[in-house]
Length: 402
Ligand code: DI6
Ligand code: FE
Image 1: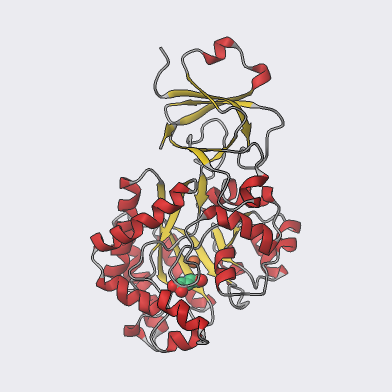
Image 2 (image 1 turned 45 degrees about the vertical axis):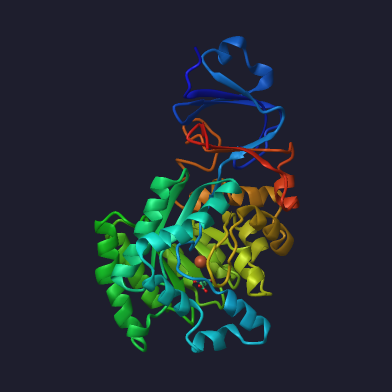
């Protein structure tokens, strides 16, 4: 009798998270993990024994997709602001009038945990329908201890109730809350002394992130946050070089960051610092597109210095109200000139690396979680080339169709 937890996908066209296999493959899953892979030409009758067989019929099998950067828990939305921008108001004017990030902070503070959960769930389900099996969710619209923890609790609950792995990140240093107007150092003190310890003590955060920018926090302030995060055993990440070049990426890399994200304004010194530290550069073409940014991240330099590139939605109500990771594959190729292989690595192996999960997911190799996607195509490039198709035939989480 085949065990229900032992499944064998046969006749699969494989992209293993880094590369495409040269011939049709069989992928064996036992108890939620990848057990072994073999070319079909080498598969014996004995190999099939004890497995429930699933014939992929030549379709593309990839790792489940990893969206390593989202802000999908928030109250309200900013559709009105989108209209105002189209009528000629600038992002800055809107922010000065109390809109922008702070309007989302007001709506998020006003929402109960259940309301935030109900609002976030369909956003996450949209990503899952697109093939996402691992997602990172940041806080950053609470900007005080209670509301930041409230956001993180909602993120953890999404991970418990839906068939998706959720990684959480405390982004207390996202913007300056109104209570600390003109006292950024005082607010950083609150983040370091109260928010990080509380999030760590309650097991609510896997990592800590910052927004290092002229309109947010300085390199020195971000370094204080990194030190506090490390003291509490949390990984670190940064929103760096999105709108200007402050050297925030190099500082994050020196502090041992898993990833630096956006990086449109990154220069070669920064790229070298990433290469030296093994820090991932996460590209967010959705925010680039929505902001009609023209400065493209330094892709050629990142390639030349061998910096791993991840790719994510940055799903958020302001600069990337986008809930499709597959759209990011196309945008990364069209706007940033990534190759389809680089883009696909960005949402699989490199996305996992950006979350410190290289040992766990993002690749189809023995020992990894059996999080997989089966697509209605036999060509991986079609995932980046086409919008709306090919269809996701099967989404598999820990070996179970989900
Ligand atoms: N960079 C961004 O693009 C978002 N946060 C950040 O640090 C913007 C978030 C928002 O506008 O709500
Ligand atoms: Fe972001």
